[in-house]
Length: 323
Image 1 (cartoon, rainbow, N blue to C red):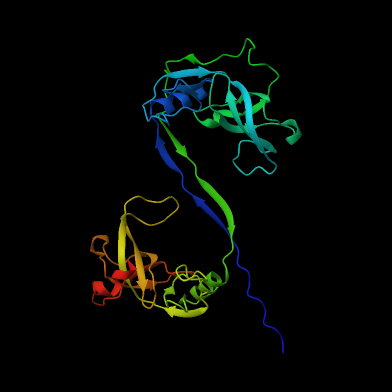
Image 2 (spheres, rainbow, N blue to C red; image 1 turned 90 degrees about the vertical axis):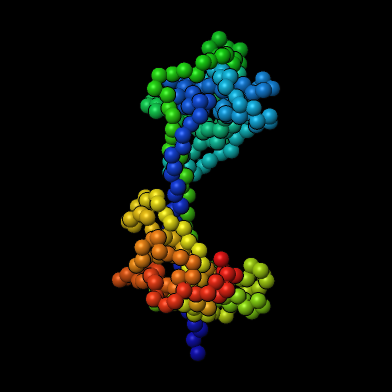
């Protein structure tokens, strides 16, 4: 008798990316435009403290802040952490230190990278100065990094906080914030069985032995009862739209024309709803209680979308607990 082979451990690269455009208020606009011009600006709070980077409203009193000041491009490291393996798109490609730097004239610290040969070269209290990027466009990356600096606070080329009107030509009024997370995803036992079933065009969940709720997709344990869910149950393929939204903004790299409908669908036999796109019906005719079925594309690993089955709508009482 031979032992069964252990199931294949599934792994896949996953990227969560959400770039968005952000408009700037007058203080943030002046700060980023100043960086483009090689000037570091802060803002004076109601307590007469200078904050760098500046904010639009006082974090203590919530008063609107507009009194801009220029601070020096030199400062002191208040704390640090060594980054021995820089990731893509970080400030430096070689190992560096993340540092909080209190610039001369400021009362708060600015987070950025410090170019240093190794962790032994970094210490709290060390003096540093801004290394400006060769090309600047009005972003925090206009500061390429900080670098060690031998000067003292009282040196002639350093300045305290001095008033600044914040006026520059062609001010920066908006930025694109790049939010991105790259990682390798490895599903557990329950998710592996779920994915394997989808490859056979079946939807399989797991039932809690205590409350008997069927989880789709399965989670391996019931979050309510705290017990393992090992009893696998095939659900669907048809289901009921419990609630939905109409999407009017086209997502990057998604070849679907707007508007379209994204819905919560309670598959028959499931104890909670999953997400799915609704097709085969005008977007303004989708409704709660609509009966739908999956549509698979050739070679698809999961349903491309759900379409109406032609059955009468489900009664509200049949799905109200799944909304």
